[in-house]
Image (cartoon, helix red, strand yellow):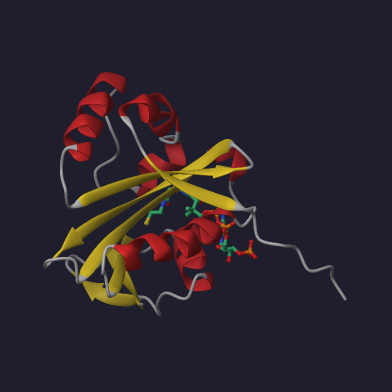
Length: 159
Ligand SMILES: CC(C)(COP(=O)(O)OP(=O)(O)OC[C@H]1O[C@@H](n2cnc3c(N)ncnc32)[C@H](O)[C@@H]1OP(=O)(O)O)[C@@H](O)C(=O)NCCC(=O)NCCS
């Protein structure tokens, strides 16, 4: 029998402007390919995006740390007076495939409940199997494939 591994001990902390460079470092080629927008053009654009985002009461950005080391980030965009929110997730390239993505999604549920959110919604490209895998393990889904142009799918989790 394989040894049971404990999930990574993830702590979520609300992002500040000082996290801009770390958040920008998450945008490697894989993350840009996965993103519908392609990601920020450069660090200056990202700094401005973060400033605008932090000023928006319906957007909540979290930095995920594992034993004090920043390993990823997640964002909740709240709609319809807090009943549901879209989830964005990014794990630092060096830390992918270690269970961090799933651990972030689990920790994010507590934050969502605090915000009185009832449904979490993730949208991703059809070919983003790593994302679909992480959201599935975290209890989302199953993927619904019939959205828009057909190049994206949607996964939901009711809290
Ligand atoms: C998608 C992403 C967040 C997953 O995070 P992660 O920490 O690497 O994922 P986990 O280690 O928690 O993986 C959980 C499960 O997802 C699936 N999975 C994750 N990465 C995978 C990969 N590269 N290929 C196939 N399945 C994968 C597996 O089922 C995995 O479980 P297993 O390792 O026990 O087989 C990460 O790859 C990432 O940041 N990608 C770039 C940005 C992105 O795609 N964000 C999501 C947009 S909606």
